[in-house]
Image (cartoon, rainbow, N blue to C red; front, side, top):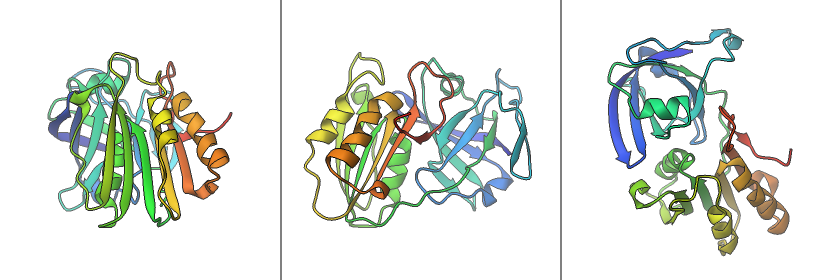
Length: 253
């Protein structure tokens, strides 16, 4: 459990903000994969300290009911002892609301990450996400081996959500706009993936978004296309109507 201080706030797009957190113990925060995420505990009121769980010897002893949300570790600078988290602003979540009013000096609790899953080396990568998975996809592209091939599909509300995705990989990026339709209610992402002609060779597919919207892709990729289980990772990053839905690989349960 770390308590860090907001030292930077940067507007990335119409509905996404980058928050830079600082603390001496960032230097030993482990992160090895673009899918690594931490739980954020933010102040309930401006200028107050966040309520934090008690963690002893890596065990969560108390405070599991405290409001928190999972977020991708977008970038880390161990020398400067800073951690970047990209947040989607929205009015329905404790951190989403805080993202709209975050101030320099705010104190934030950071718990995790629980562990890292390193994807296998592949001839090509397919990253298909909504805006909640966009920070992880952006980090993934930044860290891909120069010259690697990547197909990237991103569903957002409109052109105001488009942001640069710097990479040394050969990346083809497709932006999908759902307009006034509510997040998680469209089949844009799934339909676009189904229409793709995947490259030859052994690839790796990573999908992240609303749990119900991405579940059909798990079945399509594994059952219909016959991709190996370890070549497909479909993560339900959130679920409509469920507060605090934890990141996990979506399944049929």
